[in-house]
Length: 205
Image (cartoon, rainbow, N blue to C red):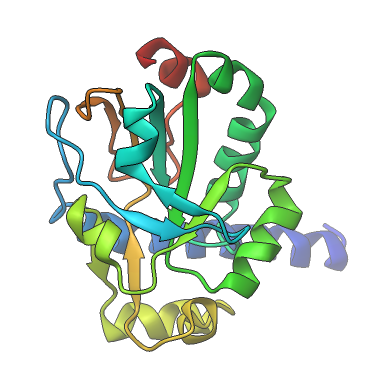
């Protein structure tokens, strides 16, 4: 085997190992999370989105719309970016069912702009600075110091990503909230690489 090919093979195996370690660590934290269930009343919140618009969940629902609410970890997460691109690609189908899409994240506004550049998202994205939205939906968790250091070793500095030292991330959950304010659909999976499909979201609307 040529030296260059051998080195490439080793690097690919190392990359897979690193991703597996991250997935395992994440799964341990997710096991302690429950989130909200189908049929639960969705907690109301009011927040500014990336465009400076006030997003008032109660007002949106009162207008007769349903809401697709999802939580994402940050622009550094390829699975988040892929999900957000799929939502953007199907946005007309979602809005055609009278749905309003809201993404919630702990990342800084600067990094939200990077997410938008990567995904072309045109729907509302809310920076949850104090984690109030994540907490009310039961999706927040604190990364332990060992995990934070591991992530840093992989080139991800959570302090820079979120603009604080809290090391809080959301479980990447997707909810569909009907106009009556009840949760009609939940996608919660301990494996962060598995996300709600647009097909399933549309079926729930």
